[in-house]
Image (cartoon, rainbow, N blue to C red; front, side, top):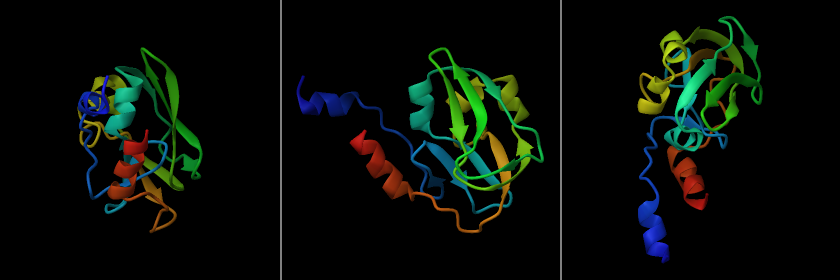
Length: 137
């Protein structure tokens, strides 16, 4: 197979400009308070169809690097690693009840939780930096 054919097989992934990203494929919308967190389209493609989402309790205190959500698909069970520190204010119960929402709309209705951030400027990749990282995968 030529390189061109390989490129054509790779899905054209959405990477919204207004979000920040972690190298663990988690997105953060820090432009709102509390910040909204979800997983990227790349992550949903890697996991496959989600069948179960184990959400933290509202009020849970998290540090950057904590495994705060468990995502279970037909392929694997993967943790969502928080790229930010703060306190969980809301969880998306609809996504917990129907995890396919996350697969179908990872940047919209498929948000996972909202966190009141400790830091106004979390250390995240820009959309451009994240897209460049994806191209190297």
